Structure formats: structure tokens, C-alpha cells
Length: 242
Image 1: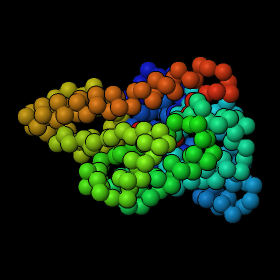
Image 2: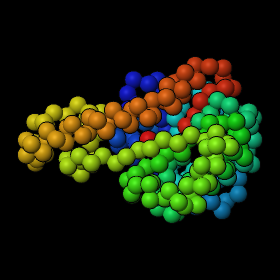
Image 3: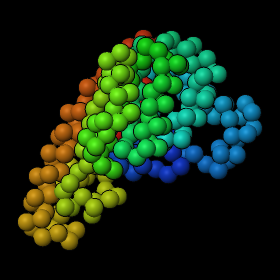
Image 4: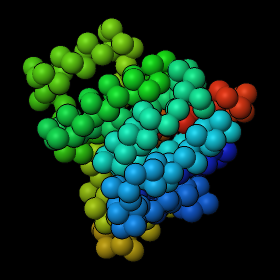
């Protein structure tokens, strides 16, 4: 999904996630260490950790991925560190905010969308509904659904859906890079312990799932790529998870 794009992907996480899925040639992992955790109460030392992001946003060509709690630390930094100096009102930025049907995830996601509007009022905001924990149709008559509809209608928030991969082989592919999975044959899956019929059905589902994910994400990735070659003060960045 990221192959071929001249974007630098940067993930802030305790453990590698995107780096493991797409490889170090695509993703730079900036580890959140215990030393960083200890800086939480050390005054300006905490904010200095984030200061490098501002100049990077000016240069452009970067897609950032923050874990849930880590994204809130980023906003804490942005609210007091002159974020507008680097990005103006965020006209060239897109923030992608993933949520699941878990109540804590929904609450954090909606709060994050609101915080984005305060630091970058003209940025594009995209709510990504990840169906891994269950279908979002069960929330049709919920406060979340009503707030989402209001954000879409009045604030221009965009919504994309990411269904889980239902291939029988999917559980056995944990730890494999996405580009490797995309190139797997039936024989490769058989070597992992599946029967030929199960392997054949899995390939059909996996390829369709990857195609659907690419179609959903490609407009935002192309937009980031196009913006990366623009004027220095008007470059693109992404927040969220692919």
C-alpha cells in the first residue's frame, strides 16, 4: 500500500508496527522509550523531543503514525509550540484518525478530531472506522453516530471504512510484511500448513482485501505525495494508522 511512494513514513511507537509490516526502507521507527516516559514531568525536556517535527513539516514528504496515547502528547506539544509557524492553519495537512467500536477508542478518536480543529482549523480530517473489533452498523443509533454525522455535514470530516481481512489464512500471516503477503502464491500458503483449497480461497480474499484497502487509502497517499513537492511551508503530513 505504501510501495512506490516517495514518502518518508515515521512511526512513534514503543514497539515497531508499520516498520515490521512495510520494512525499514519505507518506515523510520522512532521508539518511545522509558526515558521519554520519564520526561513527562520534566518541563521543557518533554516538548524538545517533539520539536524536530516542525521543520520536517516544512520540508514535507512525510507520513506520521502515532499510537493512541502518543498522539495526545503530540497535540500537547502542538498547542504550546507555535505549530502555526510551520503549517499556518493546516491547509496542506491531512489527519487520519482510526477508531474501533470500543468505547474508549471512540471517545479518544472524537476528541482527537476536535483537537485537530484547534491546532490546524483548515486541515483535512479523516475518520477511519476499523472494523477489527466489530461492525460499526451496531452504532447506528448511538451518540457516536450522531456526532459523526454532524462532523461530516457541518465540519467537512471525511469517513472511510476498513473491514477486517476474513481469509482463513490471515491468522498465520502475522509477522509477514504486507508486500510479501501480496506476492504469496498458493504454494507459499501450503508451506505454512494450509491445505490447497484453504490456500486458494485465502488468496482470493486477501487480494480483494488489499485492493479495497488501496482504493480507500490511495487518494490520501497520492495527495501526500503531490504535496511533498510543493513550497516548503505548504507540505503534507499524516496522523493515524494505515
